[in-house]
Image 1 (tube, rainbow, N blue to C red):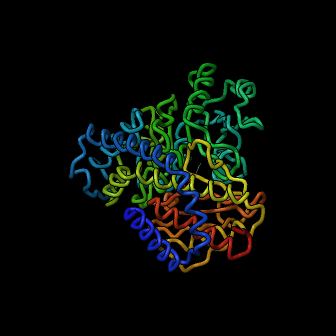
Image 2 (image 1 turned 135 degrees about the horizontal axis):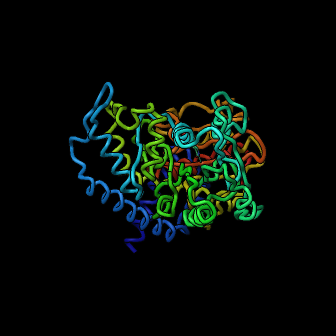
Image 3 (image 1 turned 60 degrees about the horizontal axis):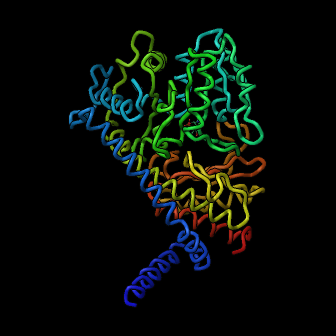
Length: 437
Ligand SMILES: *Cc1c(COP(=O)(O)O)cnc(C)c1O
């Protein structure tokens, strides 16, 4: 009896504070029921966090990380031991041969552009067997005409779409693999699309199919938003290169910039010669003072990703219950940290994003509006009140203002913050009259 009273007291204290923080009792109660039903799934996520924490810890121990790794270098950055060791740690954790992990990689798009242009030569063809790639890659490849694109350098592009049910079009892929096909790009996450995200296992099946027909083709996976969601990574199932951004999952919220490329040594080196210069490759590139945040962020990343995943699942279940279309749905397995919710009208996307912004630790008092972001072909609204600008492992949401008016929600450095953000998004939708509880 007393235990029950204590629990009720704790809960009413919490509800009161949520009330002071702008969450109405109706929103709180509605969400509490949904959270209760997710207990078991959350426990399974904690198990994966534990597994991946050990994986990262093991890599750091194996590479004998020590305090000298955290020193800053300047100038050319010759003999930057901390930088080189961090690359060993990434290679060990991803089970790759080598890695490039650098603050000179400006973002995920840059990491992908470096991996592609470092490994493709004029006359080669790049193939995407999983449909249209992420919006910013369209300009890298030259799908949309763009200065400096691969197309301008004589690299052609082929694409095979997924079938309407989301499965691979194996027949089409076999036909598209020609003598010029040098590289295949596989995007794990759905990005701004409503197709399902690929599991690592499915990526492995696709790579096996491709390598059977053309063993020398380089298989690259755009791993953005996928790191540490599962216990294996694409490099565990045959990917030659795996690429991502440090202001997403593997930076753990602490890395202030950066990207990584991990995989087969030869291909990582080719990327390094493109990032810096032919002849210089991995040998230059001072780490300035960022290495402690790269190491510590990578160490925290499994746990941060676990919190973000809980937030995504919580949001899916809330908005599914309210009758909106959500991808992934409330019960399916997860392969990235992104949650799409389709509102069908701009007002829903805008209210949702304004709620996420209002819940932020930084810039919570500003109101986001749609704008024409470089690299995107429609106006986009972005909510991000982050410690690292534009970081999307921190709680963030964005939506292109075009049909079907879906919002893409991700991140949260802690589950508790992700939860508050989702409650606030719902609060804004209720206040705008777009949702009735
Ligand atoms: C974020 C993302 C990118 C591009 O990364 P930026 O850091 O925004 O340049 C590429 N592919 C996917 C799937 C992404 O999610």
